Amino acid sequence: MEKDFKEQDSNDEDWGNPPSPLTPENQKKAFRAQMIIGIVAFVGILLPGLMFWLFGK
Image (tube, rainbow, N blue to C red; front, side, top):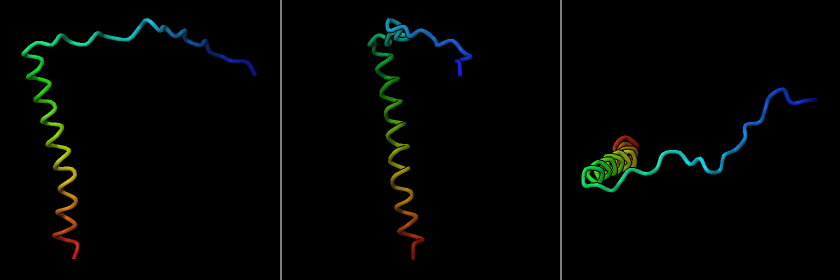
């Protein structure tokens, strides 16, 4: 059986976009994003436990 497609050459030099520079504006955005992720994770962990405790009777 022969391959019907060409294999794409990997380019080890292509790592995508460089990271954004560390500026006060970017630090604020990163901190806000981390807080949102943390709150969502906390609620995602806490809510099933509360529901089990309240309605698990």
